[in-house]
Length: 540
Image 1 (tube, rainbow, N blue to C red):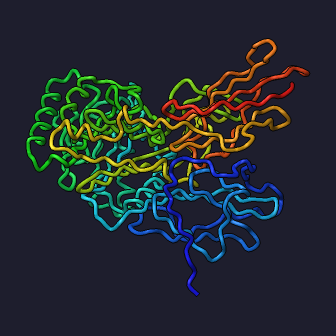
Image 2 (spheres, rainbow, N blue to C red):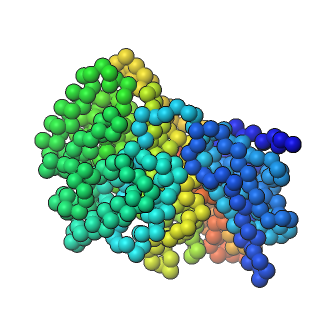
Image 3 (cartoon, one colour):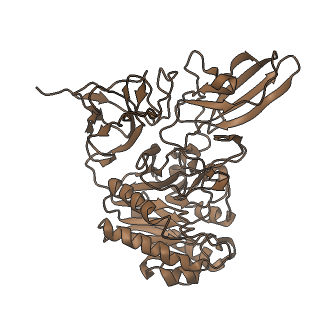
């Protein structure tokens, strides 16, 4: 008998919390008996040119429960019906857990990019800030990363590595470029990416231009002396700028303006993107212009709405919808392959309590598909397993594979269209503008989103849901009788991990016995839209 697939029209990358997320999130079994094995996926994550019929299997006697929004499945989430496949028709993150009695497996996740049969003009991977300093901590890591690349683009037309290949701080590390070259070349050969172009830009941690020229194949960095150059990828113009010198380099500015004017003068190029990569972001663009420089670069790109400018440097994550910005041109933050950052001024929950933390050991890259009428930019996690960036007080961004989160999606794909008969008409049709920023606030959907946990030592916040993502929570706890604040913090929601927790246990400072307190919490998205306040009264 033919089984009927369960159809999931999964517009599911809006980062939502599933109904019933009030159940406790699972943890791996810790009993001395054999632990519950996680489910297996019949179809691996990756890019597909048809809907995916996904079969999940687990040990006999277990129940598989799953989510499609990046959250950790609980016993309240939907169960897999034996013999029925999940039919994925849109980009989706699938996370599954096997439950047996009171035990559960670790969660497993996979990301699926579902495309049609239309062939793109070009496929490019855009990454930055790999910060490689040796083979020991990077050989296995980059085997995993290139495996993920191959699962999406088996043979990309180009890989753009947008600056900071190494971690030189004026301390003579220029020779480390040789190590990057060795690791990249070994993996290109291993994956059969024989015709994949590699195009590098110069970053602030890359030592000198001479060091780059000395250690990479000429085709990877074919500059003529100033660290800038032009390439062609399947007929597309790709311009690489040197943002370490751009504003002060008259020759570089003249070159870029001349080439953009020449390309724009050809009517055939009006709706074809011009890809520009430069290490540092341009002011007033992606991520609200954080860590930006080179105002002249933004000025020189402004007349050319067909430009898509990719930048790194900030390490800011690509989960955040502010990572794409359009005004005069399209600016895209390409994240980081070593570790990501969040905006400063927030706190994270760590093993030692709340900490002023803005980094996480998550690695991400962009997968760009240029079609004749649009450009699609997918956001992919190379590694987004939950770890603290500090272990025992020491920096620890070099977690090793396997990564349970490899290939998961950091958010819905961005689509750039160039529509208009003039530059101004093209700009007027842009999607990712300040005027069109999302204004929908998060909502708490659990009837009791706040509770005390761990014997009263933590405040448990059941995560809110949002049409994009919850960025953080404003948490204020006070003694209402005196107005004294016990805690006032903006706590990150851990949106940069995969899967995301369904609740956050926020450590509480010591309370006074017999004293009443009130906790007030609001969920806030990346654009500053805030939920209604939810409260909890409790005694010390």
